[in-house]
Amino acid sequence: MPDPSARARRRTGTGIGLVLALVLGAVLLTALPDDERRGDADGCAPRTVASWSADDPLTSEFSRYGDDAARADDWTGGDGTHSVRLPDGRLLWLFSDTYLGRVHRPPNPVGESVAWRDSTEPLVRNSAVVMRDGRLEATLPAPLFPDPAPDQWRWPVAARVEPRSPGSSEKVLRVLLWVRTAGQAPWIYGVPTATEVATLSLPDLRPESVVQVLDQRQVTDPSRRVLFGTTLVARDGWTYVFGGDDRRAAARPASHAYVARVADGALADPAAWEYWNGSAWQTRARPRPVLGDGRRTGVGSAFSVVRDGETYVLFTMATGTKGLTTLAAYWACSPTGPWHGPAKEFTPALPQSGVAAYNPQTHPALSGDGRLVLSYDVNWMETTGAAVMLSRNVSLYRPRFVTVRLGPGR
Image (tube, rainbow, N blue to C red; front, top):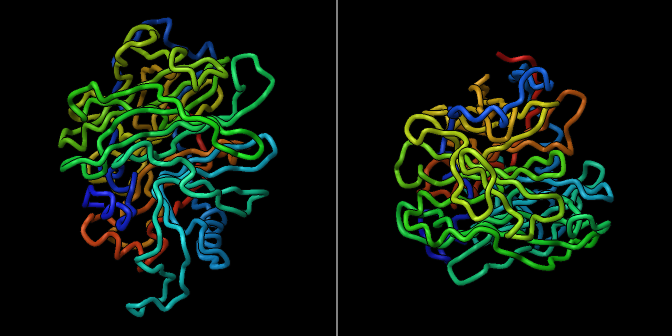
């Protein structure tokens, strides 16, 4: 990951990884007009994390599948974890940088009793794995989304099943993509370039098209470029799509969060996107932040938002040095805020010292009965030697899961 060239990038495989661990966030929102708020009369109420526990069965399922050496072209590890429920009941897991190949049983070459992979195993920019009835069963041909140009790549983020067009009875899968371009320090993880939307047919998951919805190349300062799709929430005929900038990569203290909305069935239509400009929704507007002051508060470019009744709950990494290990929660009555928090912080388990947690993502398809399933990615904290560490211990580059229960906040 430290070398921005394509060849070195394929060797390291840290991908969306560690940069997101370093883009840490809390939330502080400015006041918004009354028509952008929902009060208690509408059922919105403060929410906080009441309890959490490790979801060992789900974490173990990814270990089982990744360690299975029956095939040489399937997933053995990845980050940027997102999921979407398909109409036939299957669950599709989407990943950014992904190791394929085989995993070897312990002991590994340095005598440790952990599964390991050869450092020459292939790494691709993105992948998708199908789960049925709680069991991972197949990796789609990878990469699922080819590079758009030399020295550019696509990372899939949030996805949704929606009508092929507004009002259509035919359903398709829409996947948000981040396009990044190889760059020099501090952009060793790639320069933010554009947001795209891919359309996949159902049920065969065949990629049909990729459309660019927001080109950021005209924004001179890369730290001010906004990529959308880290998370989305469907509500009342709209898809609210959240995004962030990468100010942390440019050694600025905090990143901002933004939100756009699109009518059902129109995610792949750039003209249908409306951006929050600070006071109203507008097409072709420069989006304005909905949270973060750019100095002491903000979020990482990868965070997650989920609805709990009439309340929106946001999960991100905590601020300061705790952001390498600790998650925080915030709440609001509208996608545009104002956001309140942090409500509560908690520290999930890490496999060993020297690793970081990042990219918290909720998985609504696995949630219910008052609980939320949340994943977080783990990675070696230092860019130097990352490829060696990820090969020696495959658990350092796989998602881990917790079950969170929400309760009344303040």
